Image 1 (cartoon, rainbow, N blue to C red):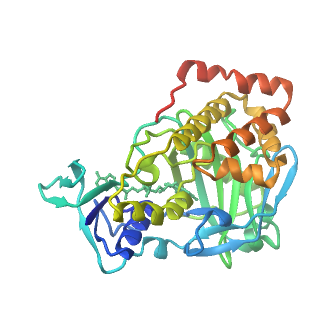
Image 2: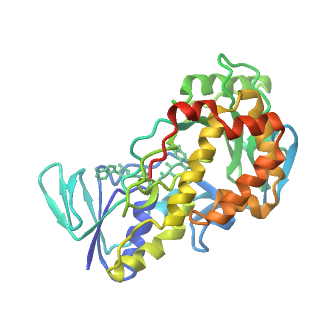
Length: 360
Ligand SMILES: Cc1cc2nc3c(=O)[nH]c(=O)nc-3n(C[C@H](O)[C@H](O)[C@H](O)COP(=O)(O)OP(=O)(O)OC[C@H]3O[C@@H](n4cnc5c(N)ncnc54)[C@H](O)[C@@H]3O)c2cc1C
Protein backbone atom coordinates (compact mmCIF):
# COMPACT_ATOMS: atom_id res chain seq x y z
CA UNK A 1 0.00 0.00 0.00
CA UNK A 2 1.19 3.56 -0.77
CA UNK A 3 0.79 6.44 1.63
CA UNK A 4 0.58 10.15 0.88
CA UNK A 5 1.42 12.36 3.84
CA UNK A 6 0.12 15.90 3.29
CA UNK A 7 2.37 18.33 5.19
CA UNK A 8 6.08 18.22 5.98
CA UNK A 9 6.13 19.62 9.52
CA UNK A 10 7.49 17.64 12.49
CA UNK A 11 4.38 15.43 12.55
CA UNK A 12 4.19 14.66 8.82
CA UNK A 13 7.87 13.82 8.66
CA UNK A 14 7.71 11.54 11.71
CA UNK A 15 4.80 9.69 10.14
CA UNK A 16 6.50 9.47 6.73
CA UNK A 17 9.64 8.00 8.36
CA UNK A 18 7.57 5.45 10.28
CA UNK A 19 5.57 4.46 7.18
CA UNK A 20 8.72 4.05 5.08
CA UNK A 21 10.29 1.95 7.86
CA UNK A 22 7.34 -0.44 7.49
CA UNK A 23 8.01 -0.81 3.79
CA UNK A 24 5.10 1.37 2.67
CA UNK A 25 5.63 3.37 -0.52
CA UNK A 26 5.59 6.84 1.04
CA UNK A 27 5.17 10.28 -0.55
CA UNK A 28 5.33 13.51 1.43
CA UNK A 29 3.78 16.64 -0.08
CA UNK A 30 4.61 20.12 1.20
CA UNK A 31 4.56 23.52 -0.51
CA UNK A 32 8.16 24.23 0.55
CA UNK A 33 9.80 21.04 1.74
CA UNK A 34 13.29 22.62 1.78
CA UNK A 35 12.23 25.62 3.88
CA UNK A 36 14.51 25.80 6.94
CA UNK A 37 12.82 25.55 10.32
CA UNK A 38 13.40 28.44 12.66
CA UNK A 39 11.28 27.22 15.57
CA UNK A 40 12.88 25.76 18.69
CA UNK A 41 10.93 22.60 19.49
CA UNK A 42 11.12 21.29 23.03
CA UNK A 43 9.36 18.72 25.21
CA UNK A 44 9.53 16.91 28.52
CA UNK A 45 12.02 14.06 28.10
CA UNK A 46 9.61 11.47 29.50
CA UNK A 47 7.03 12.36 26.82
CA UNK A 48 9.47 11.65 24.00
CA UNK A 49 10.12 8.24 22.46
CA UNK A 50 13.59 6.80 23.14
CA UNK A 51 14.79 7.53 19.59
CA UNK A 52 13.71 11.20 19.57
CA UNK A 53 16.40 13.49 18.13
CA UNK A 54 17.45 15.42 21.22
CA UNK A 55 19.92 18.31 20.84
CA UNK A 56 20.12 19.51 24.44
CA UNK A 57 18.77 17.95 27.59
CA UNK A 58 18.46 19.32 31.12
CA UNK A 59 17.87 17.11 34.11
CA UNK A 60 15.45 19.44 35.86
CA UNK A 61 13.14 22.38 35.31
CA UNK A 62 12.09 25.34 37.40
CA UNK A 63 8.90 27.37 37.55
CA UNK A 64 8.33 30.65 39.37
CA UNK A 65 4.67 31.28 40.15
CA UNK A 66 3.71 32.87 43.49
CA UNK A 67 6.48 30.57 44.77
CA UNK A 68 9.45 28.79 43.24
CA UNK A 69 9.14 25.16 42.16
CA UNK A 70 11.96 22.81 41.17
CA UNK A 71 10.60 20.09 38.90
CA UNK A 72 12.60 16.86 38.88
CA UNK A 73 11.80 16.18 35.26
CA UNK A 74 14.12 16.28 32.28
CA UNK A 75 13.41 18.77 29.50
CA UNK A 76 14.80 18.53 25.97
CA UNK A 77 15.32 20.74 22.95
CA UNK A 78 15.01 18.79 19.72
CA UNK A 79 17.54 18.76 16.91
CA UNK A 80 15.73 20.25 13.90
CA UNK A 81 18.06 18.67 11.34
CA UNK A 82 17.27 15.19 12.57
CA UNK A 83 13.61 16.05 13.13
CA UNK A 84 13.41 17.03 9.45
CA UNK A 85 15.40 14.09 8.14
CA UNK A 86 13.72 11.69 5.70
CA UNK A 87 15.14 8.45 4.35
CA UNK A 88 15.82 8.26 0.59
CA UNK A 89 12.85 5.98 0.03
CA UNK A 90 10.38 8.73 0.98
CA UNK A 91 9.41 10.59 -2.19
CA UNK A 92 9.15 14.31 -1.55
CA UNK A 93 6.83 16.36 -3.75
CA UNK A 94 6.83 20.17 -3.61
CA UNK A 95 3.26 21.38 -3.96
CA UNK A 96 0.10 22.46 -2.19
CA UNK A 97 -2.72 19.97 -1.90
CA UNK A 98 -5.99 21.66 -2.87
CA UNK A 99 -8.33 18.66 -2.88
CA UNK A 100 -8.17 15.17 -1.54
CA UNK A 101 -10.10 11.97 -1.19
CA UNK A 102 -9.08 9.01 0.95
CA UNK A 103 -6.76 7.82 -1.82
CA UNK A 104 -5.89 10.84 -3.98
CA UNK A 105 -4.34 14.23 -3.33
CA UNK A 106 -4.68 16.86 -6.04
CA UNK A 107 -2.07 19.59 -6.10
CA UNK A 108 -2.61 23.22 -7.09
CA UNK A 109 -0.81 22.64 -10.40
CA UNK A 110 -3.13 19.76 -11.28
CA UNK A 111 -0.83 16.85 -10.44
CA UNK A 112 -2.48 13.97 -8.62
CA UNK A 113 -0.66 11.81 -6.08
CA UNK A 114 -2.27 8.50 -5.18
CA UNK A 115 -2.10 6.39 -2.05
CA UNK A 116 -3.76 6.40 1.32
CA UNK A 117 -3.88 10.10 2.18
CA UNK A 118 -3.10 11.31 5.70
CA UNK A 119 -3.58 14.97 6.55
CA UNK A 120 -0.64 16.35 8.55
CA UNK A 121 -1.04 19.90 7.28
CA UNK A 122 -1.12 21.62 10.67
CA UNK A 123 -3.72 23.57 12.63
CA UNK A 124 -6.77 25.08 11.00
CA UNK A 125 -9.18 27.45 12.71
CA UNK A 126 -9.35 28.41 16.35
CA UNK A 127 -8.94 31.89 17.75
CA UNK A 128 -7.10 31.30 21.00
CA UNK A 129 -3.35 31.36 20.57
CA UNK A 130 -0.11 31.12 22.41
CA UNK A 131 2.28 33.83 21.21
CA UNK A 132 5.88 34.52 22.15
CA UNK A 133 8.94 36.47 21.11
CA UNK A 134 12.36 35.07 21.92
CA UNK A 135 16.05 35.76 21.43
CA UNK A 136 19.10 33.55 21.76
CA UNK A 137 21.68 34.89 24.21
CA UNK A 138 25.20 33.75 25.05
CA UNK A 139 24.77 31.54 28.14
CA UNK A 140 26.91 33.89 30.25
CA UNK A 141 24.47 36.78 29.55
CA UNK A 142 21.46 34.68 30.50
CA UNK A 143 22.56 34.04 34.09
CA UNK A 144 20.04 36.52 35.54
CA UNK A 145 17.33 34.19 34.21
CA UNK A 146 18.58 30.62 34.56
CA UNK A 147 21.56 30.94 36.85
CA UNK A 148 25.25 30.12 36.56
CA UNK A 149 24.62 26.37 36.29
CA UNK A 150 21.74 27.08 33.91
CA UNK A 151 22.92 24.57 31.36
CA UNK A 152 21.27 21.83 33.42
CA UNK A 153 18.03 23.67 34.04
CA UNK A 154 15.07 24.79 31.96
CA UNK A 155 13.04 27.74 33.21
CA UNK A 156 9.58 26.60 32.16
CA UNK A 157 7.81 29.74 33.33
CA UNK A 158 8.66 32.74 35.45
CA UNK A 159 5.55 34.81 36.12
CA UNK A 160 7.35 37.70 37.81
CA UNK A 161 6.15 40.79 36.02
CA UNK A 162 8.29 42.38 33.33
CA UNK A 163 9.54 45.92 34.06
CA UNK A 164 7.44 47.36 31.21
CA UNK A 165 4.04 46.52 29.75
CA UNK A 166 1.30 48.47 28.02
CA UNK A 167 -1.52 46.00 28.76
CA UNK A 168 -2.53 43.97 31.79
CA UNK A 169 -2.23 40.62 29.97
CA UNK A 170 -0.28 38.01 31.93
CA UNK A 171 2.98 36.82 30.32
CA UNK A 172 5.92 34.83 31.60
CA UNK A 173 9.57 34.35 30.79
CA UNK A 174 10.73 30.99 29.37
CA UNK A 175 14.48 30.29 29.22
CA UNK A 176 16.09 27.10 27.95
CA UNK A 177 19.62 26.14 26.92
CA UNK A 178 19.66 25.49 23.16
CA UNK A 179 23.36 24.57 22.91
CA UNK A 180 26.35 24.27 25.25
CA UNK A 181 26.79 28.04 25.27
CA UNK A 182 23.48 29.56 24.21
CA UNK A 183 20.13 30.11 25.90
CA UNK A 184 16.78 30.94 24.31
CA UNK A 185 14.92 33.54 26.38
CA UNK A 186 11.29 34.04 25.41
CA UNK A 187 8.45 36.27 26.62
CA UNK A 188 5.33 34.16 26.33
CA UNK A 189 1.61 34.70 26.46
CA UNK A 190 0.35 31.24 27.33
CA UNK A 191 -3.16 31.67 26.01
CA UNK A 192 -5.24 34.60 24.82
CA UNK A 193 -8.11 35.02 22.41
CA UNK A 194 -6.96 36.50 20.08
CA UNK A 195 -3.22 35.97 20.65
CA UNK A 196 -1.32 38.76 22.37
CA UNK A 197 0.36 40.89 19.67
CA UNK A 198 4.07 40.22 19.23
CA UNK A 199 4.98 43.91 19.68
CA UNK A 200 3.75 43.78 23.28
CA UNK A 201 5.79 40.62 23.94
CA UNK A 202 8.85 42.20 22.29
CA UNK A 203 8.53 45.32 24.44
CA UNK A 204 8.35 43.22 27.62
CA UNK A 205 11.25 40.98 26.63
CA UNK A 206 13.49 43.92 25.71
CA UNK A 207 12.62 45.61 29.01
CA UNK A 208 13.70 42.50 30.92
CA UNK A 209 17.00 42.43 29.02
CA UNK A 210 17.58 46.17 29.54
CA UNK A 211 17.37 45.79 33.33
CA UNK A 212 20.48 43.61 33.16
CA UNK A 213 22.21 45.65 30.46
CA UNK A 214 21.91 42.78 27.96
CA UNK A 215 22.03 43.97 24.32
CA UNK A 216 19.11 42.79 22.15
CA UNK A 217 20.29 40.40 19.41
CA UNK A 218 19.18 41.12 15.83
CA UNK A 219 17.37 37.82 15.28
CA UNK A 220 14.22 36.85 17.10
CA UNK A 221 12.04 33.75 17.29
CA UNK A 222 8.35 34.46 16.75
CA UNK A 223 5.80 32.01 18.04
CA UNK A 224 2.13 31.75 17.23
CA UNK A 225 0.41 28.48 18.08
CA UNK A 226 -3.34 27.98 17.59
CA UNK A 227 -4.65 26.38 20.79
CA UNK A 228 -8.21 25.53 19.79
CA UNK A 229 -7.88 24.59 16.13
CA UNK A 230 -10.29 22.09 14.60
CA UNK A 231 -9.57 18.39 15.21
CA UNK A 232 -9.85 16.49 11.92
CA UNK A 233 -10.60 12.78 11.99
CA UNK A 234 -8.00 10.57 10.38
CA UNK A 235 -5.44 13.39 10.51
CA UNK A 236 -2.09 13.44 12.25
CA UNK A 237 -0.31 16.01 14.45
CA UNK A 238 -1.69 19.52 14.90
CA UNK A 239 -4.19 18.76 12.11
CA UNK A 240 -5.73 16.13 14.39
CA UNK A 241 -6.12 18.57 17.28
CA UNK A 242 -3.12 17.27 19.22
CA UNK A 243 -1.95 20.72 20.29
CA UNK A 244 -2.39 20.78 24.04
CA UNK A 245 -4.59 23.83 24.76
CA UNK A 246 -2.74 24.58 28.00
CA UNK A 247 0.82 24.36 26.66
CA UNK A 248 0.77 24.64 22.86
CA UNK A 249 2.79 21.42 22.61
CA UNK A 250 2.15 18.64 20.10
CA UNK A 251 5.53 17.55 18.75
CA UNK A 252 6.22 14.92 21.43
CA UNK A 253 2.74 13.45 20.89
CA UNK A 254 3.38 13.21 17.14
CA UNK A 255 6.77 11.54 17.59
CA UNK A 256 5.30 9.07 20.07
CA UNK A 257 2.31 8.20 17.96
CA UNK A 258 3.93 8.00 14.53
CA UNK A 259 4.82 4.27 14.86
CA UNK A 260 1.35 3.45 16.21
CA UNK A 261 -0.43 5.19 13.33
CA UNK A 262 2.00 3.73 10.77
CA UNK A 263 1.14 0.26 12.10
CA UNK A 264 -2.59 0.98 11.67
CA UNK A 265 -1.97 2.15 8.10
CA UNK A 266 0.24 -0.85 7.30
CA UNK A 267 -2.53 -3.13 8.55
CA UNK A 268 -5.17 -1.35 6.47
CA UNK A 269 -6.96 -0.07 9.57
CA UNK A 270 -8.78 3.23 10.03
CA UNK A 271 -7.09 6.07 11.91
CA UNK A 272 -9.85 7.44 14.11
CA UNK A 273 -10.06 9.21 17.42
CA UNK A 274 -11.27 7.12 20.32
CA UNK A 275 -14.09 8.27 22.59
CA UNK A 276 -11.53 8.75 25.37
CA UNK A 277 -9.37 10.92 23.13
CA UNK A 278 -12.34 13.13 22.23
CA UNK A 279 -13.35 13.41 25.88
CA UNK A 280 -9.82 14.37 26.98
CA UNK A 281 -9.75 17.06 24.32
CA UNK A 282 -13.10 18.44 25.47
CA UNK A 283 -11.86 18.56 29.07
CA UNK A 284 -8.65 20.28 28.04
CA UNK A 285 -10.59 22.84 26.02
CA UNK A 286 -12.74 23.52 29.06
CA UNK A 287 -9.53 24.05 31.00
CA UNK A 288 -8.45 26.54 28.34
CA UNK A 289 -11.71 28.49 28.72
CA UNK A 290 -11.24 28.62 32.48
CA UNK A 291 -7.67 29.86 32.06
CA UNK A 292 -8.76 32.52 29.56
CA UNK A 293 -11.37 33.78 31.99
CA UNK A 294 -9.06 34.13 35.01
CA UNK A 295 -8.17 37.69 36.04
CA UNK A 296 -4.50 38.29 35.02
CA UNK A 297 -3.26 38.63 38.59
CA UNK A 298 -4.61 35.20 39.50
CA UNK A 299 -2.82 33.28 36.74
CA UNK A 300 0.43 32.80 38.74
CA UNK A 301 -1.63 31.49 41.69
CA UNK A 302 -3.34 29.03 39.36
CA UNK A 303 0.04 27.68 38.22
CA UNK A 304 1.23 27.61 41.80
CA UNK A 305 -1.60 25.16 42.39
CA UNK A 306 -0.62 23.21 39.31
CA UNK A 307 3.02 22.78 40.34
CA UNK A 308 1.92 21.67 43.80
CA UNK A 309 0.21 18.66 42.25
CA UNK A 310 2.15 15.40 42.46
CA UNK A 311 4.53 14.68 39.58
CA UNK A 312 2.24 11.97 38.30
CA UNK A 313 -0.82 14.25 38.23
CA UNK A 314 1.18 16.92 36.40
CA UNK A 315 2.24 14.32 33.85
CA UNK A 316 -1.32 13.03 33.51
CA UNK A 317 -2.56 16.50 32.66
CA UNK A 318 0.24 17.46 30.32
CA UNK A 319 0.68 14.10 28.56
CA UNK A 320 -1.74 11.22 27.97
CA UNK A 321 -3.97 12.32 25.08
CA UNK A 322 -6.49 9.56 25.84
CA UNK A 323 -6.07 9.19 29.60
CA UNK A 324 -9.49 10.48 30.57
CA UNK A 325 -9.26 9.33 34.17
CA UNK A 326 -5.81 10.88 34.68
CA UNK A 327 -6.81 14.16 33.04
CA UNK A 328 -10.02 14.44 35.08
CA UNK A 329 -8.19 13.51 38.30
CA UNK A 330 -5.51 16.16 37.71
CA UNK A 331 -8.08 18.84 36.91
CA UNK A 332 -10.20 18.02 39.96
CA UNK A 333 -7.19 17.99 42.25
CA UNK A 334 -6.04 21.34 40.88
CA UNK A 335 -9.53 22.75 41.34
CA UNK A 336 -9.51 21.57 44.96
CA UNK A 337 -6.11 23.14 45.64
CA UNK A 338 -6.91 26.75 44.72
CA UNK A 339 -8.80 29.41 46.70
CA UNK A 340 -12.60 29.39 46.88
CA UNK A 341 -12.79 32.57 44.84
CA UNK A 342 -10.70 31.07 42.09
CA UNK A 343 -12.71 27.86 42.19
CA UNK A 344 -15.84 29.85 41.48
CA UNK A 345 -14.17 31.58 38.56
CA UNK A 346 -12.82 28.30 37.20
CA UNK A 347 -16.17 26.57 37.55
CA UNK A 348 -18.13 29.40 35.91
CA UNK A 349 -15.74 31.11 33.55
CA UNK A 350 -17.51 34.24 32.29
CA UNK A 351 -15.72 34.20 28.98
CA UNK A 352 -16.64 30.60 28.35
CA UNK A 353 -20.32 31.39 28.72
CA UNK A 354 -19.97 33.60 25.68
CA UNK A 355 -17.64 31.63 23.47
CA UNK A 356 -17.45 28.06 24.68
CA UNK A 357 -17.11 25.64 21.80
CA UNK A 358 -15.93 22.11 21.92
CA UNK A 359 -14.54 21.44 18.46
CA UNK A 360 -14.10 17.74 18.09
C1 LIG B 1 8.31 29.21 16.95
C2 LIG B 1 7.50 28.04 17.42
C3 LIG B 1 7.95 27.27 18.49
C4 LIG B 1 7.24 26.15 18.90
N1 LIG B 1 7.71 25.40 19.94
C5 LIG B 1 7.10 24.24 20.24
C6 LIG B 1 7.65 23.37 21.22
O1 LIG B 1 8.64 23.70 21.86
N2 LIG B 1 7.05 22.17 21.44
C7 LIG B 1 5.94 21.78 20.75
O2 LIG B 1 5.45 20.67 20.96
N3 LIG B 1 5.37 22.61 19.86
C8 LIG B 1 5.92 23.82 19.59
N4 LIG B 1 5.37 24.66 18.67
C9 LIG B 1 4.09 24.33 18.11
C10 LIG B 1 4.36 23.65 16.80
O3 LIG B 1 4.09 24.50 15.72
C11 LIG B 1 3.55 22.52 16.56
O4 LIG B 1 3.51 21.74 17.72
C12 LIG B 1 4.12 21.69 15.39
O5 LIG B 1 4.74 22.47 14.39
C13 LIG B 1 2.99 20.97 14.78
O6 LIG B 1 3.55 20.12 13.83
P1 LIG B 1 2.70 19.61 12.61
O7 LIG B 1 3.67 18.90 11.75
O8 LIG B 1 1.49 18.92 13.08
O9 LIG B 1 2.18 20.94 11.86
P2 LIG B 1 3.03 22.08 11.17
O10 LIG B 1 4.35 22.23 11.80
O11 LIG B 1 2.13 23.25 11.09
O12 LIG B 1 3.29 21.52 9.70
C14 LIG B 1 2.30 21.47 8.72
C15 LIG B 1 2.96 21.45 7.35
O13 LIG B 1 1.95 21.22 6.38
C16 LIG B 1 2.16 22.11 5.30
N5 LIG B 1 0.88 22.32 4.63
C17 LIG B 1 -0.15 23.12 5.02
N6 LIG B 1 -1.16 23.06 4.14
C18 LIG B 1 -0.76 22.22 3.15
C19 LIG B 1 -1.35 21.77 1.94
N7 LIG B 1 -2.58 22.18 1.59
N8 LIG B 1 -0.67 20.92 1.16
C20 LIG B 1 0.57 20.48 1.52
N9 LIG B 1 1.19 20.87 2.67
C21 LIG B 1 0.53 21.74 3.46
C22 LIG B 1 2.71 23.36 5.93
O14 LIG B 1 3.41 24.16 4.99
C23 LIG B 1 3.64 22.77 7.00
O15 LIG B 1 4.93 22.52 6.49
C24 LIG B 1 6.04 25.80 18.25
C25 LIG B 1 5.57 26.60 17.20
C26 LIG B 1 6.29 27.71 16.80
C27 LIG B 1 5.75 28.54 15.67
